[in-house]
Image (tube, rainbow over all chains, first blue to last red):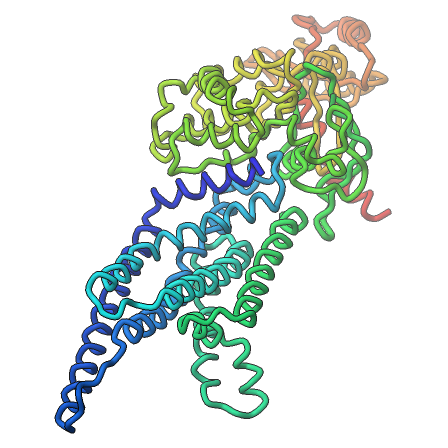
Length: 263
Length: 321
């Protein structure tokens, strides 16, 4: 446990001096800000038009649930951004240690492989959460300026879903990162995986045959969608949970095998 | 303190370390000497628990390096060939991190980091980022990392590589000062290093132990007095023939020195034989003036070369067998 904390602490302090983390955080902020602004404008415009149309038809005004629509659009787009930015957070996790030879220090210290793998995973997940933090501010901003206020369930579900999605990418990413000393290679591998998951989502949309349906099960954003709607169902929890578990398991095996592989 | 029995490590087809056994007593400094690729690093990695052995056992303080890896890891400090440094940390933060993963209790940590930096003579660099340090300082940070938890056994893989002569001397002093309370294994391919720092030397080549002894014994016992230098005035060919006829003379090399027919000859004898009196008798018997006759000690360097350089002719003979 002490070993795990030492690794976690080291990783966190590493993130805050590493340009990669700052650049990823910065790009994430820009993208999420731009999309939030865009979605907000679109939804308000839509609500305004709908209201006008309704009044022209002689109705007594028409109310569109703007906060929910904005939130849903925003959280969905966050999922896609996360899919494309997380690889850059995960790519150096083990590659860098292997290249620098510091893996040898960790593996000859009285800490377990699990300490190393979990410490690193939790640290990357924490950084991921820190990356999301500023977007929470947008949501709180909406609280102050909208009526009705945005639904709590949707916010909680959305952020839980995004954390799970990130955790899955980080766990699988740390495995891919442990396979090579080269950060570029691991980055490309993880990015490729993200891209594949994203494409699965697009290809299987609306397909009704058996293949499309089984592929649909692997499409991450499909599992992320219910969370965004505020529905926390077990299918999603099990789906993300087992991917995270699987990724960590593979990473542990991979770290263990370094002792046998190294020539 | 360290017991190695029949240790073998193979990477696929290639055997890096082949059935070696040795032991190191508490407080001793043992030097691993061998050319690059001899198996020094592999042996050290097995001892630290980084690599599992293919065959054989290694024990540190009574704990098997594989079965009780954690107990062993608690007791060793290890400096790999390339110091395992996090370049974007400061020296103090880095050593604090190492102290944490080496289980140094919280209340002792600051004190141990300070002691290690003092010993490695990097106390004035504590606040600096490691990436701003020169090669020599980085090596010393690596050394500080190996001693920060005050381990019983210190394993140093080529600790003086990349240092300038002054730093090399300082590091050797540091290593010597650690002996006694710590058991140390260090590897090197620089010979004077071994004779200066180590109590005992293991010469290793192609994964096998070629010789184990104290540096003095290696120099004196093994070959001492068995190489004789002769200076005499004599015809070259006749001198060579005469010397070669002496029973026990293995290798004779004759060179002329200046003019006037003076020759120097170097005679190498089989181990344990002193041919000086016979050589003197023969030369004087021929009526040649004898100017000098003395036994020469082989330097450790020469022993090393002799022990580790394979005779191509012999190797060929073995292959055709």
